[in-house]
Image (cartoon, rainbow, N blue to C red):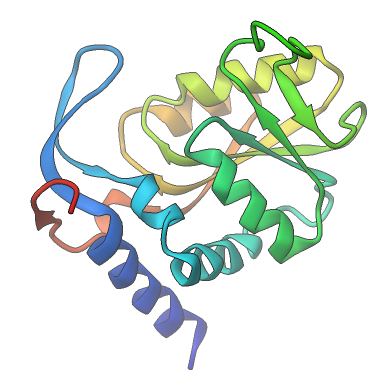
Length: 183
């Protein structure tokens, strides 16, 4: 089976499993008519493994660490870490309020070229904020990776801050979403 055929098959499987036509409200108050449900992807072990395997080809060869953003990026970064052999860290939006009080958990990250991983990129604001946190902590970030890129300016915003976005799929790659909410 060719790489193109495998990606086409994976795209159909991702759409069948995780693309939902139902209202979805963004943090900025905007509303989408369909959304990518990363929890459905993460809940399907075969689909998660196959997605991570496909994403592994997008990881730069000089990357030394993967960073998953809570919550959607965490299962992806765990699967991608297993597929690539690269260690991982997990990023909270805010430092934990108790215990370690850390915002970054996992492997040692200082000085390691880091790729940020998330499920969907829209405006790029969340990825940019996480890149800044990692950079301030000593982890050079020049790349980000996502399953799905929606054309809402994220690629351009990240590029302005020297972060290259690599997406497995864009919104244009997806077939028509299925109807309904969670099963």
